[in-house]
Image (cartoon, rainbow, N blue to C red; front, side, top):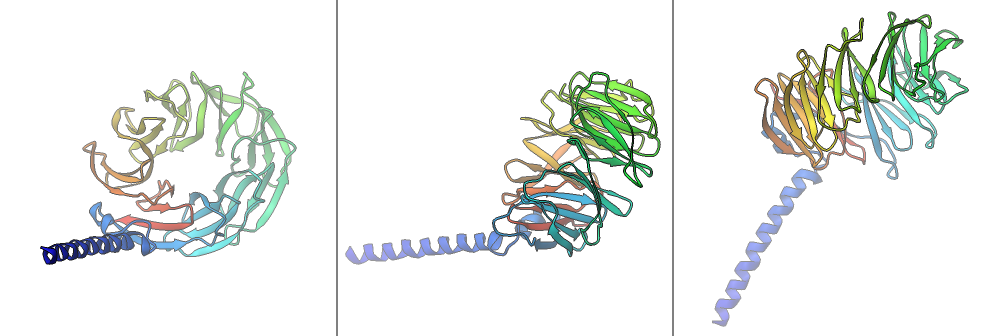
Amino acid sequence: MKMLKILRWKFVLLVGLVVFCGGQRCSSNQSGSGSLVWPRLLEHVGLEIVWERKLPIKKKESLERLVILGDRMYAFSDRNYIVSMNRKKGNFIFSRPFAPAEFAVLGLELYKDELMSIVGNRLVEINPESGRELRSKRMGFGITCPAARNSSYFYLAGSDRRLRTFRAEDKVKLFEVAAENESLITSVIADDNSVVFATEAGNVISIAPDKPRRLWQFDAADGIVGPIVRDGESLFVASRDTYVYKLNVQMGTPPVWKYQTGGILDKAPRVTGGVVYQYVHNKGLTAIDKKSGKFMWRVEKGIDLLAEAKGKAYVLRDKGELVVMDNKKKKRLYSVNFAQVSRYAANLADSKIYIADEAGRIACLRPVD
């Protein structure tokens, strides 16, 4: 009996070691390799890794946000260190301090061959090849949202509720406008035909680009959240009144359509070729038909759209999960564990997916044909 008990204990110990080692090996394959997502998991949803990198940020810093502009991607740390990358190949273009750590940075936009941003209360123009500052203009007022510009002018929204127009070549102020209700301006977009700005009172106002002349005004029941999104001749805005609105850039009102989300909105919509994706607080990500304004589907606890490819939407959920939705059939296809992903860039330009973690590990994925 004693010998039998010893043999049983040896057998249990052996099984335990096999199970432990197997578990360790699986864990090593998923995270020890340095990959954000295990390649075999990606196969399950038809994705593959294009490239992976570790951003050159300090250990005490963390990755805060990713911005896609053209064929570049820009990564900002929580101490305003910037890294520029070729997003197709993953090679670094430049890395340098962008602003003092304590300064607020509003937006990063590409206009022709220059970057522009708001650093504190300065309008800054930057060389996209080196990251070096080309020109800057300190403003005598606080700025509430990213700058907009066209071929002739810059447009800056002030904390005093005024939208100011500056000549692009020398930053001379030409005129200023405000909403009739004096509400704070939250977003501005511009081209050579018009300038459109939104307010926290729910106004969307279009003016002439070169003079203080109002072209049209649309009024939602509550404030406009996030930036105005332009797509061709259409504008898309989300309001705290729970509606997403599609407006015509030439007329503004009445809206082309409005969709009631049934929840609080605090982010702008994502707009692709045929779908408007709207995050709804405590509900998830809702897909709306871009043409008709009709409901398509919702991913409960969905945070954002990562990318779209061949009728499939790749959606990140708040529990570290990637969900793949079929837009045509309006149903969920499959999902995969993205537990290590805490940062991402919403890519509306093509089918590539960009994911990262706070430590600066970043990966580019693509659907397998």
